[in-house]
Length: 144
Image (cartoon, rainbow, N blue to C red; front, side, top):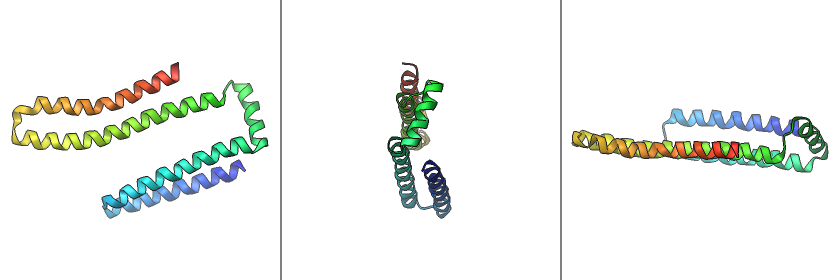
């Protein structure tokens, strides 16, 4: 059961990567948003399938319990790592979107009036702070 899910995950990942490369070559922003949504939804389905396989399949669950007893790992530790990864990942995605819009606006404003360069750097720095906050939250999750 687990091998089938891993195989399907690899096939879906390869398909979404090739679809994303195809859309990037076509240079259409609308299609890129659709590709990101498709990739995230398929990733969510894969994560859900792994969770269901871990809870439903008694052989896999028994093996997981034996491995957890040997290594000291638990389901809570797995969710802790998942939460840390999500907090950092989503914060960096937000930072990329914020710096993209603020940075382009700042460049346009500085080209009109070079005296406001310092003010624009503050706004770009505030946008970059989002990633730092996400990293701090993930460190707190991991070490608490």
